[in-house]
Image (cartoon, rainbow, N blue to C red; front, side):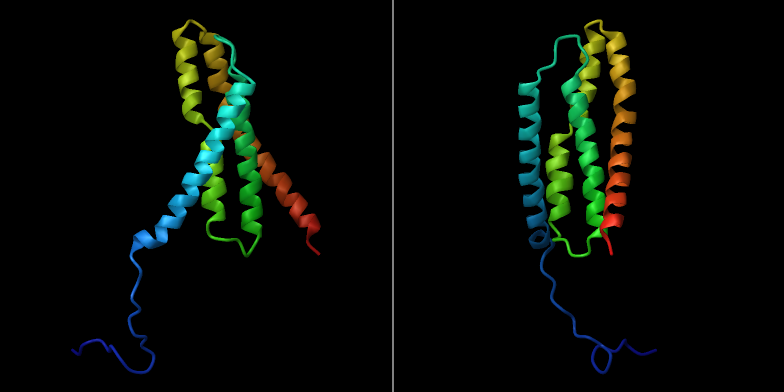
Length: 153
């Protein structure tokens, strides 16, 4: 048995790799900047349309549905475009839309509604949000793809 060939025709010399932290740092920064932007937009929405105690949390509901719709558009556009900067998806998808949508607040809202005796409202919110969010992603993605197909020669 012979040792594997390390030099010669068809064998490339080893290329020194940069440490992983150097390749991940821009992605982490893009997600952080996008997340701050999305969270600020969500907070602004909650100030503009405050929820009424015991009432259906419409602001959080529509923020989550709208964020899911934009995610559907974003993913349809990004999968159809060939040349997209590698930080676009982490910035907008994970960062901005991850910071904007708030399924943790959805869970807290349900718990607070149920805990304060508004069980019917909590159950309605619990039942309505997931199908509305999934429908928003699907419809926005489908519509975006139809529009993009028509624009191609």
